[in-house]
Image (tube, rainbow, N blue to C red; front, side, top):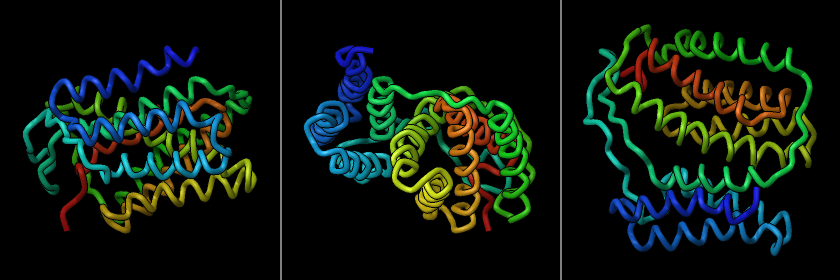
Length: 252
């Protein structure tokens, strides 16, 4: 896909956030610099420097460390699990920008697809079954089946923003480079470890579960060669968490 068409993805997202009043001038400037770095400087800078700057900038935006971005509250806070804190669906414009920009970058990459479909499906089934059971066994969540009224809003934000941005960042940008430097298993394992580490602010146990889930996402991407399957598996695990378990996390 030509660069000028791919550029429309982050530019339209950034413009919508500005137009609705959720992205201020400093956020707009930071967003334009980020888009220029990811989509315009990859050929101008040395590869390792571009990758390092792109990774750090993506992490800073995804972690809401860059000023000028305000979340869009899409639902009021409400307790959707009897053993968990209140939860509200919010659209994070900085994380959306990361997802759209990295998607525009990813669409310009040529990636050969692996042909290990059986292993990919085995990883998917093990991850879907194992992660909820592990979270239950650790006491991180309880059994709380439900059908929340915010489901469709949650799906749009979680799958279209959170899972997409995180998989493009950790599997698309990080894992592919680490595998090239370290080999398959060290690259996949280190990516999963870092994925777990960024979830540590929620709780140490949550970081452990997220790291093991990240291993599943990394393996399905490696075995299939399709980042879309990693996004789908990530979204499916999160959906099972929402529908069947304490959400967001069990109160202790």
